Image (cartoon, rainbow, N blue to C red; front, side):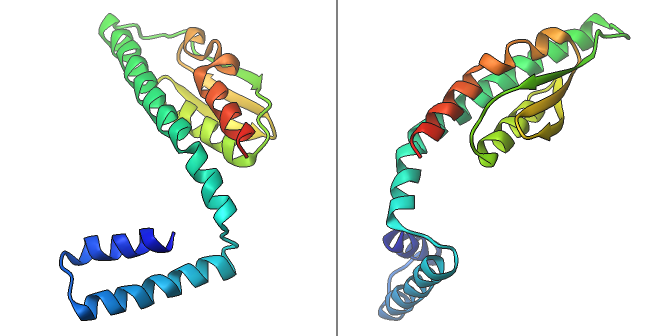
Length: 154
């Protein structure tokens, strides 16, 4: 993390001089010390984050694809001129271990047009969907599978 902070320092400054280098070394050391002392940062946690990076990038790619597909479905609903959709509210239990994974999933559902997470209580998701088909299979979706894999790497 220290080297990463130093790299960011040099990138933001745009040039390298003796003063910038010395100040960057000192500032990066102070931020690193702060993170270890008060944020309980450890190299083990950094390694765990690094192991999950590939899965996280894949998750973001899947999320973007699902957003595009859902946008297309909503556009088709609008073009069809349907005034009344078959909107529904469903409750689904998705057993994710960590609160972070649950929150990421809830936000992913909300980011996908046509669905919104109304509430999240432990592992019970209450979801509003413009059409029931938009919310089908959420409990077995790629989102959930990738989040389970990320949790297993913890």
